[in-house]
Image (cartoon, rainbow, N blue to C red; front, side):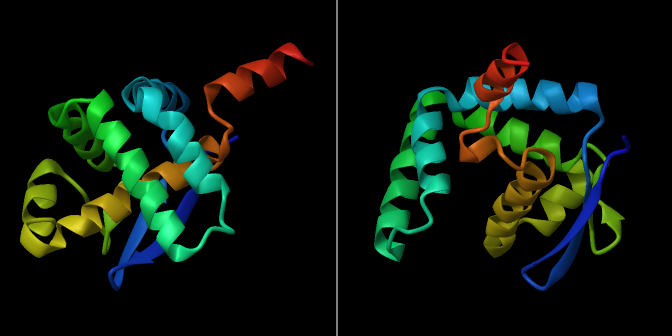
Length: 145
């Protein structure tokens, strides 16, 4: 099976993301799980409950983000975001995102676009990850076959 490619418009800019090859995808997923640590249940709960009001969703997101930043040093979070965006599997308006492109494009007020692009990469590579379908559920599925 080949890696899928998806497109999305973020801040009126076209993004194209191709899934990571298997080994790279597994390494990033393990890093995400380790980094999210004790914030993972809150993030899963937030992502899986779309029936909440906007205020409840914002509150849930803030709580999950706070736990994330308590469980991982900012340098590790930033490093993972930058590495996932600059692997060569994501393009912004037809240009591969490199570290220099990252520093130029996402500077200043455009920093929020980097977070949205990171979310898109997570969505493309790990669709069910934040819906309670992380590594643990995948391993338990394998054991039941």
